[in-house]
Image 1 (cartoon, rainbow, N blue to C red):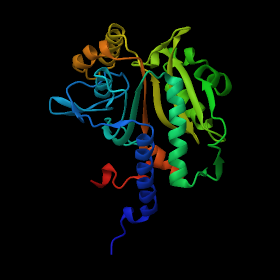
Image 2: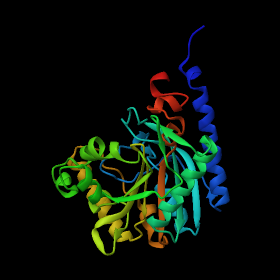
Image 3: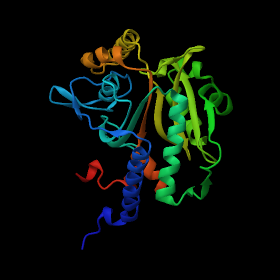
Image 4: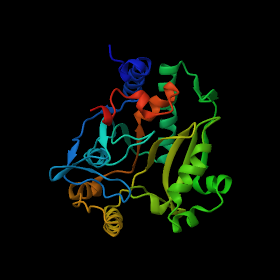
Length: 305
């Protein structure tokens, strides 16, 4: 009888089901409406470093962000969804070209409120899925105590030999983050890494008292990036300018230039102040299972299809 990989991860897939059930309970308790938006869209957000998968003359969405923000503009105050998202050529120990993403948005929030919501969500999920005790590589992560907030500038001062500005100028920001800083974050308690350089926040609001940085954060636990959240940019004119700059960057790099996302840009004029977050469910399950590869927490990987 053949040995299937799936037979070796039954316990992980059962824990994955617990994680998904806990997510739904959390948002029901918090009064969020679960929504569904299309997976296939005519124009993705033109972010320079994210590649959308073509689907005929349209694209599979890299995130439900644009459609969910249109719902905010239409008057929906608190919304969330679980969905499959697609990013071309992303495959590795922590990446899949088809991933499960959790996104939620709340009108009237900023990134501080969203960080608090993210903390409450992760605590609730881990309480249900792991009995409240999170252990990664033999090290216990303290979820109940205060979570650390660290600015990008502070993280570079602590762990890197260059400033974030120099890393950006040299084209090494992602390299320094991925190889030097990220592996050191979140081993005693979770870390919110916040206040990213403005150049790295295509859809986020800039800080009023320091427009060189954006109100953007990522959550790290045991060296693993879990999410990307921010105070939303609601200035339609500024968003058009940013999209144009991203398109130029894509063109200069020889990448596909996407059609303009006009329905989103028009709706942005009616969108209230809000915050949103995108959290990788596959990675959250990796934490819950103390798994060191994404393949250990999904039923099928591309190579098996």
